[in-house]
Figure 1 (tube, helix red, strand yellow):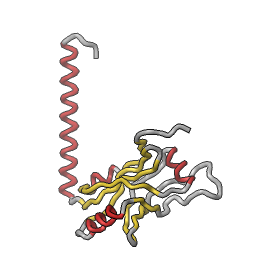
Figure 2 (cartoon, helix red, strand yellow; figure 1 turned 90 degrees about the vertical axis):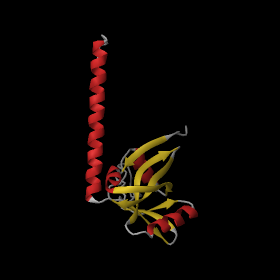
Figure 3 (cartoon, helix red, strand yellow; figure 1 turned 60 degrees about the vertical axis):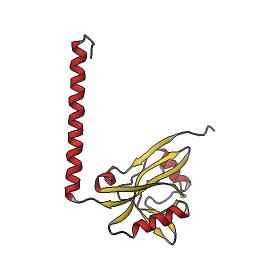
Figure 4 (cartoon, helix red, strand yellow; figure 1 turned 30 degrees about the vertical axis):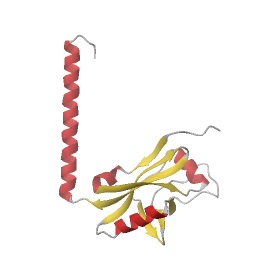
Length: 165
């Protein structure tokens, strides 16, 4: 069997980037059951309600939804089970120190396969206030408007030069 190369995205937590100020990010391996891997390879997962905890020096991914494998039998996994994350001891200690700050939490940002191994990108984050969210929306809208204006300008200049668009 050919080993896959590169990064194959399974799920992203876009809401986390909107709701939190993202600090340090880490890449962690995930301990999975066989049917979980098959379900992830089918591109089915949801990180919307997921979070990470540190218990007894170990990192755990909680509340991540990996649906049961459709062709699984009695050996199928439960959808929202707690999954262990594989991090170096120094990284776990650094995350634990970061959690001592008030308002800090650890959220998963993305779940993907990297060179055939399941990985999750986690980040130490602090919650945004309502005015920060409004500012993020305003920046996003102004960026989209600028891109639209630039695209229409490029279209007009291409037509004036006789290029068919």
